[in-house]
Length: 431
Image (cartoon, rainbow, N blue to C red; front, top):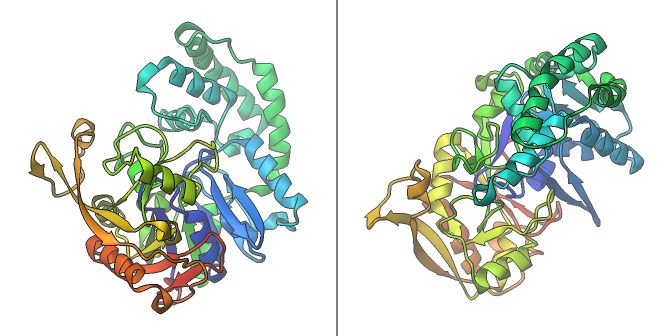
C-alpha cells in the first residue's frame, strides 16, 4: 500500500493545501507532522475558499481520519477556533475523525510575547517571524522545559510545570525584553478551559497510525512551509523552527521511514518567499509585481505580500536531493500565461565561479547571481485544460524543461485554484 509524503520544495506557499486535498481522496489517514499555526493552507472547494492553519486539509473529506502529530506545536485557542468554524459550516460532523498526539507541545502566552518582543528588538536583523510563538515553543521542546498536551490535560502536572517555567520566562520578559510579566492565575484558568475541550481529541496517535498501516490503510503525510525553511537544511537563520523536509514526516508522526513509499515535492511554476533571507531570482520590477498580482501572492496566515521571482532549478534540485523526491507537483502554471517570455534559473555564479549546489553559508548565498535561460510563453488561458496533451505547445515545453532540469518527474500540474483545475500525470497512490 502506498503511503505518501507531501513537502514544499521551495520556501513554502507552494500550494500544498490543494495537492493534499486532491490526494486525500486516495488516503485513509491524513497526518500533519510539523509546524504550527504560522502556516496556512488555502483551498477552493466549489465556490468556497477555506483557510486552514492547523487541521489537515483532509478534514474537508468525509470518512478520513485526520491526525495532528507529535511534531506539531499547538496553540489551543487557534485550534479551538478552527474546529468551531469547521463545525459551524458542517465540515466536522464527528469528533472522532480528528486526533491530537498526546506528545505534541503546547504554545503558551509567554511564547508569543517573547517571539514578538525579540523580533521588535532585532531592528534590521529581523527574521520575519509571524509572532505566533512557534520558535520559542520549539526552543522549550528542545530544551526539555516544554509543556505537552498530556501535561495540559492533567491539572496537577500543568500547574506544577507552569509555576516552574514562569520563573524563567518572567525573568526574560522583564529583565531582558522590558515587558510585563505573565500571570500564573490568568494562564492557568484560560488553559484549563482549553484542556476541557481538547481532552476528547487526545490519543496515542503513533500507535493508532501504525496499527492502521499494519492493517493495509494508506496514509498521506502533510508538511507545512518548505524545504528551504527547514531548520537544518534551509537558509539558516531565515528558517522556521521545525523539520519541514520529508524526514520530519517520520519523526513528527511516530512511524518508521520504511513506511513511506512516495515523496512528492510541491513547487510553483515560479518562486515566492515570505520574510527575510536570500532569494537569488527575486524580481523587484514589473515582472515581480505581475507575478504577485496575477498569482494573488499574499500570505494565507499573515496577509503579507510575497516576494516573487522566476523558477529556480538550483532550489528544486536541492529539494530533490535532501527529500528524496519521487515526483513533483507543479502548481500555478496558469499564472505564467500572460507573459511573452519566461525565464528559468539554471544555475548560480558567486564571485565569478559557477556553483554545483546551494551554498550553506548565508553570506555567499546572498551574493549568488542567477544564470537564466529564456523560454517562449504561450499567451493563452489554460485554466480549462484537463490533460497534459491539451496544453499549448510552449506550456508543455516549459513543463518538460523544468522536469529535465530538476532531474525528477513532474506528476501533477495545477492550472487553477479549484480541485478540478488539475492535470494528473501519475497518481502516487496507485503505483
